[in-house]
Length: 426
Image 1 (cartoon, one colour):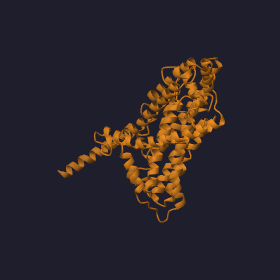
Image 2 (cartoon, rainbow, N blue to C red):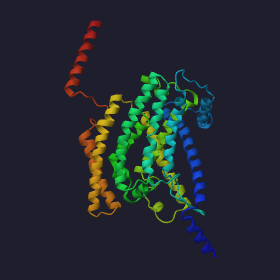
Image 3 (cartoon, rainbow, N blue to C red):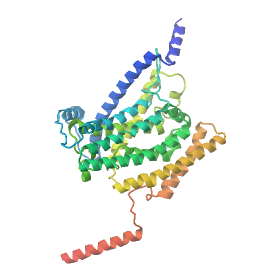
Image 4 (tube, rainbow, N blue to C red):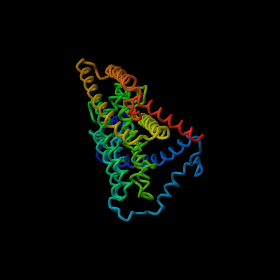
């Protein structure tokens, strides 16, 4: 009887839950994800300050609480207690709504990202995703694109020329790089044959991670993600040295804080999407244990830890790049998006579509052999693009538009002027 009861319990834990259990589990997952992401956003700001201090060989915040961990709480209380100021000629309704419009899309995207393998319970199997939409990937693209309205409205409603310029820059930049981002992810859909994020994770568990099978798409998505989140070297919308503070020039107190919070939330969301689309999501590398057999609580915990470690690595990468690279000029930024990334994305989609069709017609099964063929072709494409065609001149937007002869002529003129100035000084 005991063995029969245990078997029945195990069978129940692998079944879909009832409607009531599903609703209760959904509410719990929403609260848990919102809490984790908000705490993560808060301590990502702290991590950025400490990592920047480490890179610059100085001390970061370390006085409020043990190791400075309570600095985040102190900053939050400070922003809540600060006085709110409103520009006299601002459109108050849009001025107040803009920070929320910028923040909400970054949080909504988390609703469809699977963050662990399903959890077996006595009431049925609980999927570790808030809303397991069959069109989850399209949902992320649609919702993430709404954030641009918050930045544009913040600049326009402030009735400040500097804020307006920052808002226009932000909207132009985000719209430009959304196209390249969308085109790069088309390759993922071609390989998985599905827009369901859970199915994309399963495809990577059988063929290999897409970072190896779709390497150029990964690079395009990574660059576009930096531009979409307004992070260095794509932080032109803020550009403190040029536009004072960009689209949030007129904001103060907690409304001002909502814009950095939305930026960090977007950074974490982009890292999670990067992991889901190109690094196997919650898949544990070098083993098939998490993808075979029955679901268990241990599998759920370990796959969640795998997903968290991968996401935190890319959050660290965001911070690392900020304190390593200089900011682009605006013409370089737009040129990279339209003249380089978009043509490469279009050509790459054509190549991948042709390759997938050819491999399917050859009868190659969708397993490690299919993935091996994709990896071989992508290795050749990466060498051709970065080491033959580019060599630091095409893909990089920081190259000079002048040829070597023109540069040499300008240097000669500069040297002659310097010599003349030295002679006059003597």
